[in-house]
Image (cartoon, rainbow, N blue to C red):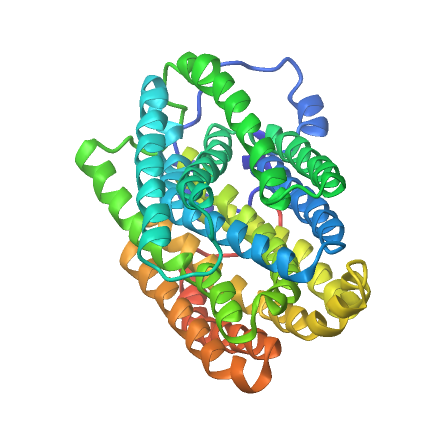
Length: 451
C-alpha cells in the first residue's frame, strides 16, 4: 500500500476493504517507514506544486502590474484587456483538452506522446479560429494596427500551448516542475517590462508577456515530446481504463462544452468594463480580478490534483475528497481573511488611485470564493463520475448569472457592481449544488478524520 493510501480516509467499510485486491508495487523500498517520513503523498505534492505555481504567478504578476502602473492608465488598461482576452480565448481553446490530459494520461502509456500531440493540434486550431473571429467579427478598439490584428491569433495559440504543457506535467505527476517554469516566466516578463519601459517601446507590456512565454513553450515541449513522453511504455497500476477513440471523442466534446461556458465570464467582464466605464476603469478592475482569480485558482489547483489522483486510482474517490476538503480549508480560510482585511494596502502598491477604485470590487470577489468552492467540489465529483451534463449546466448557470448581474449593476454601482454581481451569482449556485454534494459525501461514508 502506497503512502497516499496510508493517510487517506476509508471510503468503504472494513469488510469491503478487506476484499480489495492488493496493489503490486514495481519497486519496494527497503524501509517504507523512512519513505513515509520524507516523501509526501502524490496528491498533496501535486496540489502544493500547482498552488506554488499559482502563488508565484500571482505575486510576480502583481509586481508586473505595479511596474506597468507607472505607465499611462489608458495604455495599461488597453494592454491588460488584450492579454486578458488572449488568455481567456486560449483557455477556451485548450482547457477542455487539458482536463482530458488529466483524466487519461495515467492510462495512456505508450500512446502518451501521440495523445498530447493530437490535443496540441486541436487546441492550436481552435485558438487560431477564435483569435481570428475576435479580430474580424467582434467590434473592438483594442487592436488598432494590421500587425496587431495578425499577431493576436498567434498569441492566443501560444498561450494555449503554454497552458496545456502544465496540464501534461500534471497528468503525468510531474507538477513539481511547474513552479520553476512559472517563476522563470514571471521573472522574464517582469525584466522585459522594465527594459521596454525604459525604451518606451510601443506595445511593450504585451511583448514583455509574449516573448518569455514563447521561450518557455519551446524549452518545456522539447523535453516533454523529445524525452519524457516517449519513455512512457505502460499504463500505471490502478489507473482508470483508457477510453477508445470514440470514448475520447465523447469526453472531448463534453469537456469542450464545459470549457466554453467556464471562460465566458472572464472573457466578457473586462470587455463589459471597457464598454461601459472605459479602458482606464479596466486598469483598476484588472488587478482585483487578478488577485481574486489567483486565490480561486488555488482551489482549482487542488481540485485538478484530485481529478488526476482519482484517475490514477479510482478506488479512492471518496478518501481523496476528504483530503481535498482539508487542503482547501487550509488554503481558503486564511487567504480570504487576509485579502478582505488588507485589500486597500495590497492595491496601494500600485498607487492610491488603484486602492481607492479597486478595494471594494476586490473584497466582493474574494468574498465569493467560499461559495464558489461548493460548486467546484461538486463539479469535480461530476467529472470523475462522467456526469458531464451536470457540469455544463452548473458552469452555464454561473456564466449567465454573473454576466446578468454585472450588466445590471455596473451602470449604477460602477466597478463595485461587477463584484457584487459576481458574489450574488456564486451564492445562488452554491445554494443549488450544496444538497447533491452533501448527498454524495453521506453516501460514501465521508469523514474528515484521518486513520
